[in-house]
Length: 399
Image (cartoon, rainbow, N blue to C red):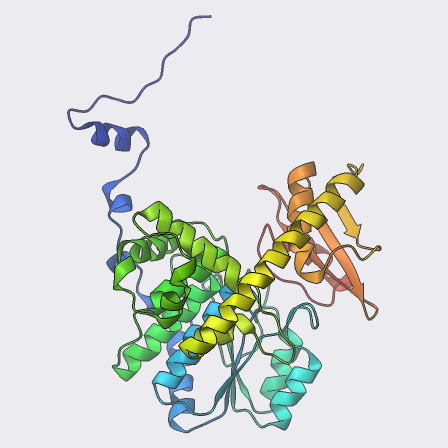
């Protein structure tokens, strides 16, 4: 059978023009800028959320920011907390749950604390879209709940005061694959627009850090955010960046700058503490002298974390044989895997066996788990199918 050659049509232009045509890369993709980000007013409830937050700040109401203990959640909490302070709030607090002690989501003790200490507003960042019971309990107590999230939405949403999440079916914002920190950043932008004030330009840097850390697709708005930070690298004047500089490679080109962003994501992924505190978030908020001490602690934690990753990898690769089913639930009966390494373990086993994997651990009679899967499978759909057997679930299609 004769071969049939397939090649792109030759164009009368530069080599670069030919490459762009061959790879179907448009000029609009290459030259995309901040001006190409869709209008944030298209977010469902963003103006409602903005108005309530402004009212709370101006009335000196008590505000709680409820975050998530990964880099996306920490950078989200930082941007919102710092911005509230900049617009005059003197009565706002944060709580970052420690998954090693509390697992995911709002626990009864936290909700009871909100009620007992008479908070007026709670704003979730990088989470909350699966908090049905707790949202109802908080709202019934007279506390307004504002949810900002980016995770997949189930058949219904919590009955909150406002829900800002591009994945809602009736949300008109065209780009759906944002990280949680980008949703928070756009909410802060909306508040600033409504108040006719400026926001700290350094927030864009931390939005890029959280976006990169959460491993969302680097396309569309996500790509624009990262590209903008790489291009404007030397324009950022942030005390945390300045304090971290001794640990950076020289940022001479985009490749080096990306490596610095990845380094920061690794450092800020540590720092879990009890009672809603978080060392990584503290690092972003405190004075330079305190930052120097905290950064050293976070780097030491990262080295310990990398050692634990190697240890768990060795255990899983040597101990786990291929399951006979196309699904794999792995219960950590020997307590070899820490709570914060369940996602890593599920990813490793998914890549090894090319099947969906859920890693489970038991704590106080309740199983918690992390799932991972390959392209073509939908974990959220699978968990929705068996939802009557689950206390709570949420996330993305593949995690």
